[in-house]
Length: 92
Image (tube, rainbow, N blue to C red; front, side, top):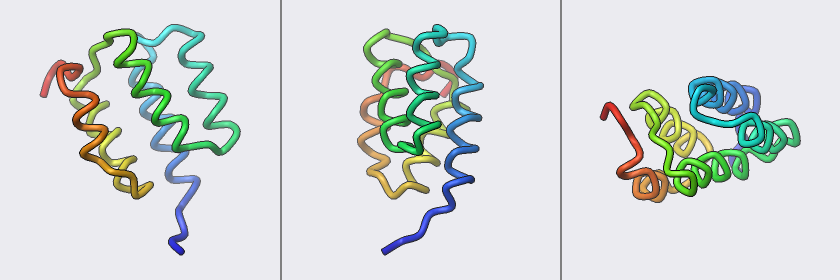
C-alpha cells in the first residue's frame, strides 16, 4: 500500500482552487472546498474537473498542469483528466 503526503495533496488542491478563483462561483468553490476539508481529495479533484466541463469553463495551462500533477501524485489515471479537459484549456 502506498502512503501519500496528504498535506502536499491538500496544498496542491488549494493552489488549484486559488487559480480558479476568478472563474468559479462561490458556490462552486465551496463545493470543492468541502471535499478538501473532509479529506476527500479524489472527490475534490473530480468535482472540480466536472464543474469545468459542465459549466463550459476555460482554465489556464497552469491549472491544467496542476490537475495532471495531482492525478499523478494521487495515482489516478492522468489520461482520463487530460481527455475530460480537452478543449477547456486556454493557453496550452
